[in-house]
Length: 276
Length: 292
Image (tube, rainbow over all chains, first blue to last red):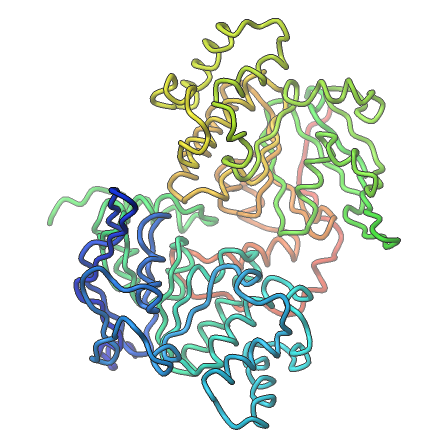
């Protein structure tokens, strides 16, 4: 039995969530009656191509804008459209491009410190120590607090973005394409860090990605979005050994792969199944 | 074997910025045979894109760039050509596809106008009507369903995948002998990327165009290229035929790159050793050519 099955109560739930954007007389249904849940300590991946509604989902979960219909629940409690400080602290975001999500005029230390100040975490003198501890937790030396984001590499900046999210001691981390701007070697290290942090802090991840190969190796379960609709949801292993939806199969078959074993998996996956 | 279309020998590049010298390329050598699809793969900052820009002669315009080494294209020493002759090669004998198709196309003019400009580079006397006919057939070659409509559209009216097909059609319009593709699918969704690459591969194979394919994505390289050069910090660290490279990577850096790619068969996220002193090891050359 896996750890996620033991802790089965969903920490996060979306019930019948829809979002329609209206521009003039034009209506765009970005998300259509979506039902999703994630258990405590689990990594739920949301995959799909651009325009599938992944980021719309994340934005509503974070309370940036409300759903047109439907609700989100956190630990069984309804999440209101307007979030108070405590709720905002509970769900944190790591964006794709750390260069645009970190303030270039603030040192790394000041960015982390701000998160601690806003949410009054720890006592004032203790906060500088906490900044150092956060940096070390994401694998950077504490002295980096003095640096500006421009003096860091892409991977280091993303570590800072992760540390800033962790500063708020969240329960849920929304990761919106956290490694797609990184080189493959750096990506592997950041993904490993994310995996370690999740286990150490018992965090729940909502991991948004278009890269199914990454998702295969980090997520416990996967939700596949296509043009605002949830077309398939499964445990990661099942999704890859037996994808049910044609769109999922086309996504898996389009990933550039590097080994013959993967070719083989794809071949068996694509074979038409006779029995239903 | 025939003479290579392109051969680069000991190419070095240094940028001089505010009195500081930054060495970008430390003497790279590579060659591309007739009709061969060669990939140059490496991480950001390794020198992939500057190499492409030097071949096209774009970087030479920069006063901060110090370039040495030899570049032979179709048997001609590129550095000996006048600027005018060199300019005449671009878009005719050698052409390039960039990463982001939508920003490579001019949003102010419809596709038709831009196609005409491209075709006029190859044939200055081509009539507007002939150019349109030719553009239509080129767009059909890249499987664009309604070429008439696309020709009269602007780039912002079309999807990224459609724009990239238009770019491919334009790049091949004057039947270049060398196509340089710099991360051609990176800005596209995976399914669109896969389609576009297949299409491009079929097209260049049919026409016998040589390709220098620049990418950071090993999976894409595996699907597309015949032979691969791996570049790390301005040095080529390994070259091998694609199959051989993927079955049996020789250099420590290539091995690390390969290990870092997540697999759809699972296996978790690789634990890469922090130590990378072997990345600077001498080049592993596993290309055996019958030079007669």
